[in-house]
Image (cartoon, rainbow, N blue to C red; front, side, top):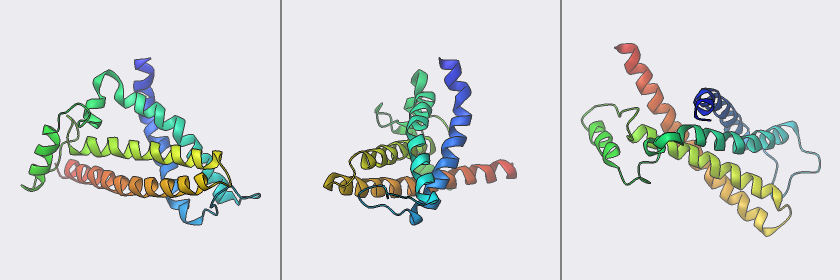
Length: 171
């Protein structure tokens, strides 16, 4: 099982990145409040389908990156080891890039991106399961908040990746 998850890590990351990009880019054009429209337009329908797919893909990716104790890199606060994050933050103030591995700032941001994606997917699915109710409206608000958090964390993740690519090219 471990070898399968290792092989799926890259493709899952790519699929989630593409789905997330579509979801974020299409979100301003979604026409839903407390239920799915009777005849949804293609943007709304594609958004819902991609969002539904993010739940099993996100769970599979979480299993892939969290196996064998590697979850400590992405969620160092769960293991009580924030030393790497602290060193990375202190290093930023000294003009050094954060590390990509070892439970530092960038892997923690990647873990938070994954959690925000899963919360966004869960609230989106739950929103559709209780159409026309006050709970649907509350879940819509939770979905929007989780999605905005996801967008901010995704931007931080992309900034970290871009800085490391620039550093790699300069070296």
